[in-house]
Length: 606
Ligand code: GDP
Ligand code: MG
Image (cartoon, rainbow, N blue to C red):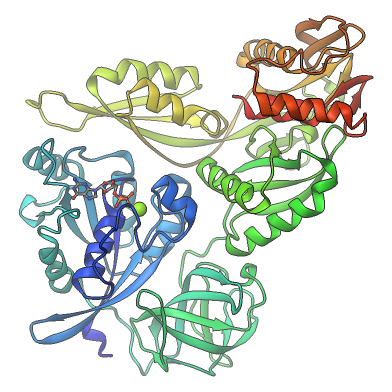
């Protein structure tokens, strides 16, 4: 296929601005898929069930379409990018396979936090940006105002903006035209040495790892022997083709084309995203910007019934085949038994994985409070600690800790003016610094919007920040963040003791200024959930050796359901069953009998 007639592009947008809907319209308009009769919220490119349920695209999906323009058949490769802050790195590498991007903005909502972050990524990559205003069919749409916003925020010439309704299809043909006319064709010659950029991978139960690649030069053929710049491992291409939108095998892939390939890779950890592939015995310069994925949020996962660990581990392994960005390590806890410590790119990533795990594993799991990787600096070395049980006791000078640092992010929040005060409060209560703000609309607009930027500890946003942001702004605030390195911080480990015995699975890393409040809150929570014992039990929160909060659980008759609040019938029945089954599932914590369900209740109730 002639390179001049190929266009590689992405759609970049804030969540819900209509990326998947527009992708579907483009596929329909080019005859790649049939117009759906029932088609409601069933975007073709959102393949994972959770993606559809939550209406977000987690994994980048790719499709090739053909479109006749000026009498010539063009090949248009859509490289779909995931729409969430946790996946900034995925966005960035999918864009490395494109020459242009459609910047989609909802005409009723205007520029949002992720519109800005993805715009900057695309701009840095030197992509041709086609601004598109979507949802002009909505009565609340304000195309002129939002166009002015795009001009002031992005420096976009308003005459370049295409107004569309992805829902009704109005204006979508103009988008196709702009893709062909404004986006340059890819570089790369058939005579070049083979150079393929690996930008995504999928796992197929039968064929193993399927990699999505873009050909930067040369021709890739079935049977070719290739090698990875990153691992130096060698493979033979067993199948290749284009995504149309399902896999369609072809004989070869030419420069500028985007497609899939299967080779004898055993598991998805071998398909390094951002890797460059070349012909065996020929060297090429690798594509720049390769970086391994970096887990930033960690949590322990345990089965409710400790006998189920093998089953849980198997489910986790099956899921990580399709999502290599999750890191897995075995972990054992004296309170919860054998489990795994998982690392995620961010909290959404964690939520999505948790939901997939619950579907796959088909039983309740206990997930410990999420933590981030802290840097512990000693006189002669530095270590990263993401598990509270490994965190040193900073109150004890014998540990010789010089400094603790925590990861921070640069957060941007966009809100209507009237919520500005609430957002400032929210940021301050989450230890934000270096607040700065500016108006997005110039002068006359009735309800202006403000962009607030600040530096916030990552640990503060991995718990409830996003939910609070949404509820305190009636859903109007949008939020995005990027990595901003490490900063020194006054952090300490909080332990919880039952009858003077620490319970490892409950330990937390907290900022000293929040310690008292958190200690009191957790002790109250434990007091509600732990079944009463035949003797009195002190429940304490401690920093080092100093107790900072305490509740006392009175002695009681042996009714295991009495301590439960909010009478959940099934849960009560479960507790009763447990009691009936005898004590085998009870954990003796300093002679306090603590059912695994109590952990489930503590850790799953926010
Ligand atoms: P994504 O998160 O960017 O992929 O957004 P979706 O394509 O999933 O769209 C989010 C919501 O906006 C869905 O409920 C769509 O039906 C709706 N939507 C998308 N485009 C339009 C449009 O042009 N007009 C209207 N009224 N709704 C739209
Ligand atoms: Mg989507």
